[in-house]
Length: 518
Image (cartoon, rainbow, N blue to C red; front, side, top):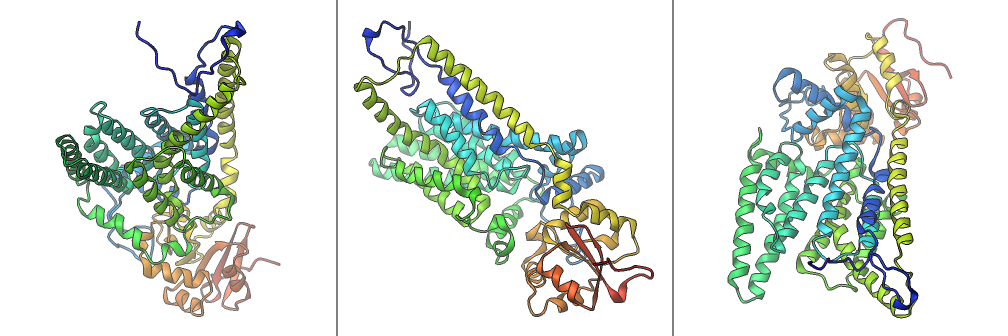
């Protein structure tokens, strides 16, 4: 009978004189517990502002049987050419909403991220790792990405990149041929979300690593063969990425978003992480552990390049923390498995390690099962109160009021993250087209700058409103703009509910419209 390979972190050595039967602890239970324990972190209610206009766009694509190629929702950039890089995800949003409402949307995207963590775990297994450390690292990774998880299109980037990095790990170790399916993966990915460009980030790191190894090892034929195969797959991925409705222009559109002079100034996910915020605490811990962990285990060049580039991306923008997590989590597990093995060996030598008895084994299984069940239950609990959450974060009641007063206003100045919701509620009504919404690249830096001028009450904020013929404003209560409009004789507040306020230009107010009291 062939010998069974046992994970060093799952079996505890004991003194033979104890007389107790020694059994291996179930490593799968530790891994399953860690994987399921990610669910409370990654399961979220629908709350992303982009959900609304993405679902609307998906509905238009489905009903019209054609892509949306120009702006339809604003009066500020009407007809502007739109390279809709996430049309596939928009169809998914619409389909999920139509079939199961917001609950199904939340469940689906939690599952997508969970599958991504399953790929991370699969990649961990390609090298020696303690299952205990692996499970703990999965939970840490889920906590590190707390600021970015949710029902959002870019969650598919996490899953696809996790799959790709697993394929690459197997390719580097000479296992299997899954890596050669990467062009197919990129074909699907590119038709879902513009984050497919991260496929080439991973491939680029791989090619640099193989090229350095080829030079370092005296230009060996073996390394050259690996480099050629990786280059061939990369070329295949480039070709596959062009098989979209947009062709090469998709690359241009995606990369333009990285060089916007305005997005990082007021869009939170495009700003660098604020280490004073508690929602990036997990990221801080993971960053510290991976840097310290290099002391325990000498890293490969491939690992170093991945980690350094992942850190640079995450420090550039909050939304890229998910890229750091999927890149770095297995490396953290490998590093700290070495430290765990040293500790385990030291304790065992001193005779203090508990015997792995059947009772302990059963206890580990039961505890792991309890963690799995509790994690699922807690994740399900977080999905309660979707309606209340939507009402508290979006101008639901204000939109109801506008719907009941169709003669109020023709051109709105709206809060940036409410534009998608208002478009979702009122499209195709011409008098309810929005000033701005969450497709920042389509809006353009010039419009974003003008929005900032009004939002932050620059000296020309009133001139901006005048130049666009704005005759009503829908904005969050207790913001500086809200206060300025209340103090202005040009504007009349006609609605307030604690979430949103509506102001109408007095010269454009219909007869009989009265201001709110107080």
